[in-house]
Length: 236
Image (cartoon, rainbow, N blue to C red; front, side, top):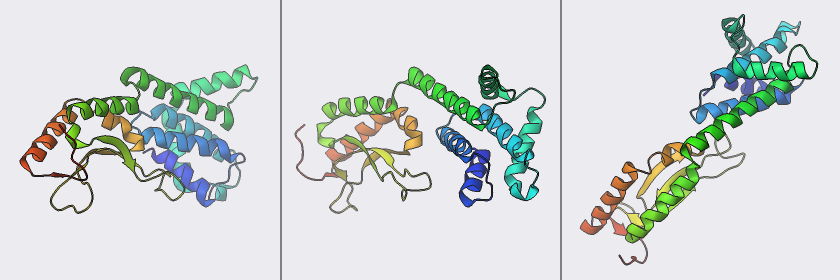
């Protein structure tokens, strides 16, 4: 994940950094961290975050209010971008600031530019690859017709909420079956996938040949008695 976003989130949570207007920094860090976990390139986002974090901290005359790991990383990225390589997110924020009569964009303006860039990336991925949940559902529904004895379904283990992992979402998405291996008692233990919500596209990308190969293997194992059906066995 983005180390800069992680440091910002940690400093805000533990109170080691108290910017004048915390929410924009919180939302930027959270959005960038999630974007990184989903496998997007966050370079432009991190440059924008570094600029606004460094500008905020450098403008504070009290060094004791600057958590050093965060300040040093923001300054390092800032210096590497000088004089004019702060990227498209910074450029967008600057354009918005000038249109509003400001010289330098503030944290809130950066926040909207960061979230807009994230949304553009997300939309572009959907246009290119489609909605991952719809892709998986369609593949599973089609497979359920061809392999009715497997008892296929798509869903997750885990949940969403304050107690659900580091990011509040510990769901593991899988294609489930009604099959069990000999070592499993009163449950099903044959499934396909197991990816975090942030990486759901990884499962969607496997719905072609890898999924078809797994289905054939499951059916072969069932026919050979290497696995068994849990519950009423569906007719072929």
